[in-house]
Length: 331
Image (cartoon, rainbow, N blue to C red; front, side):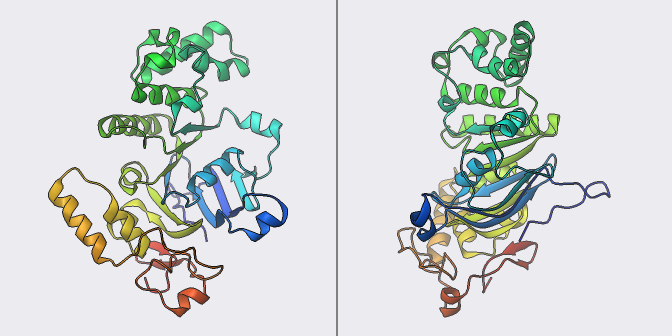
């Protein structure tokens, strides 16, 4: 079931990205067929200028979805469409053509910055691949660095001369220098301290508003997702547990797993943190070390205090509860 994207300014807006019934399995042949799917029937849309947050624990499949969209992971089933064009099995030529419009910011900035190249060389590379002259590429790199809060002369320095937060700003500049329409942010702020994290989040929000960007923002901290995203998709073991407007999903969660994520989100005030810990423990949700459930049924059933035989026998479909869609028989 897809998340409903509201019409804008009285007209229907085609999605920037449409993911439908996506399935991803690791391995090959019989091994892949026998193993649980890393992503199992996930659907969502992203409208132009919209940010959708993808949140879940480690191993929930959220980064796998990002890699599938970027063409870094083979898709086993379902489809991915970018501006109405199916890119599920896009070849190298089609991916190169999309390179300027579909970009990424990863958790580790060193994954996109060559330590042997100057910052300017890393930023200018995608521009030169698209035919920009050296002087034009340098000028645009300097402008982009200035826009992300770094000095223009940073083009002649190396990544090792910058802090972790500054290197992530450089990664953001590199992702946006080709004026993309959609950016996949995969744990883009999770390795940063809280103050630097807030700065980068504000930068991403400002650039989105200025340029009309669409984001797929992937994170494990639902509080971070709530800050930037307009809609949230909650994943558990490769399946969607809950989705809907960010305020609805994070402020009034219906699924027990979403409730646990919200209660586990850290806050800087000790008294509030203690209250959250007590609330989390009162939910009666077992830890993530619970045994892996067998095929079929609800993947969260071995940790859920509401689980019954129905949860074991029948996978819950997404259904509307309040203002969100929830995959729970008892929500």
